Amino acid sequence: MFADTTLTNQFIDLEHQHGAHNYHPLPVVLERGEGVYLWDVEGNKYFDFLSAYSAVNQGHCHPKIIKALNDQAQQLCLTSRAFHNSTFGPFAAFITTYFGFDKILPMNSGAEAVETAIKIARKWGVQKKGIPQEQAQIVVCHGNFHGRTTTIISFSDDEVAKKDFGPYTPGFISIPHNNAEELRKTLENNSNIVGFLVEPIQGEAGIFVPEENYLREVQQLCNQYQVLFIADEIQTGIARTGSLLAVCGNCNCSSSCLRQPDTFANPDILILGKALSGGVYPVSAVLANNNVMDVIQPGEHGSTFGGNPIAAAVAMSALRVVKEEKLAENARKLGKIFRSEINEYIKTSNVVLLVRGKGLLNAIVINDTPESDTAWNICLALKENGLLAKPTHGNIIRFAPPLIMTEEELLECVSIITKTLSAFETN
Image (tube, rainbow, N blue to C red; front, side):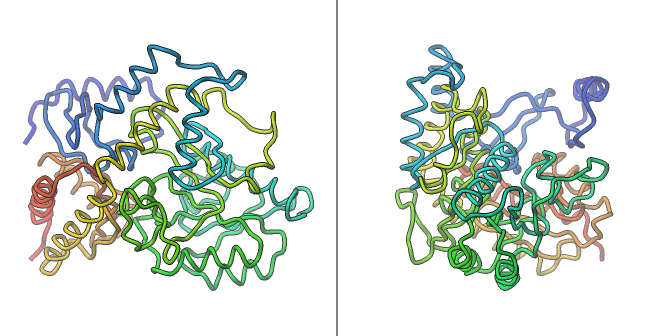
């Protein structure tokens, strides 16, 4: 479809020569984005079906979010937290009310927020649960992805992210995801556990959605054994899965309804990032109630940029857009249509085994080994047909478009996907 790649190759060569080789991008060089679309340096137009790993839920360059960025950038950008500023307080009040918690500890990246949650949980364990110094344990799940810092990779199963980066940080116990009974046994046999850190839906692992009651059972077990339930909603939160948060389960909440107690799993610590800024600016946050967050005192944790005025203004605007444009409802509706259409294609397909997901966080599993390049080649073909997606774990392709997408646009994308897949079918 797209023949001339002269500029593309120039930019890729420049990056390859001067940038660290810590990513393996699709061979496309993007220059502009608007709504659900991206354009490359040659002017070719694409549907974005990755949304910067769910950071761009509100669409590229949303005018309300960009206005908030520009307005604040012209007034005050950074003070550090050595001083108060007139934006962080209103943001703290806004986001804690929005998600129903007492306190926020602001950071910048998702990995920073996870590290923050780990520190809070460990200190809470010492001060509130009476765990001996340096004995605190945190339970995590096989197949997790919480970032790539030294501590986080210490409890990762991903050998690519982990190998040769030791020594590793101790203090973690890994159990299967979506297995409440295994969590019960682990909590029953270890009195030094302070937290259970989990992605409500495992994203990087391949969009694994747990059983309906799993998160509620997790919450009950954490309450029973006096352990903090820590929900990493960096990728799944902020309307991506058809609810404001993935821990909302199947409550079918609207954007004006935060929680329905009969279905909502209530984490003790909530970790947010990515779409918290609509992809416009690095913003992450850790939310908790006073009995947890108050263990952190001055000098014990922080960030020069965490809670800066631009981040606060951008995040408030991004969260307002989610409610005003009913993005949770749209993700829920379009996700059902997407899985229905792909399942119809799968009935006669040899190349796709299944589709799974929730809301507009979905994946297809390709009928090949994780070591094969079939999924990668399909993504290259999708690019040539005007749609950008990326494989994960070899034979899985993640599909996560901006939540502002219309039904007409979604069906056009489904047509591109099925047309592309059909070229890989075998008789």
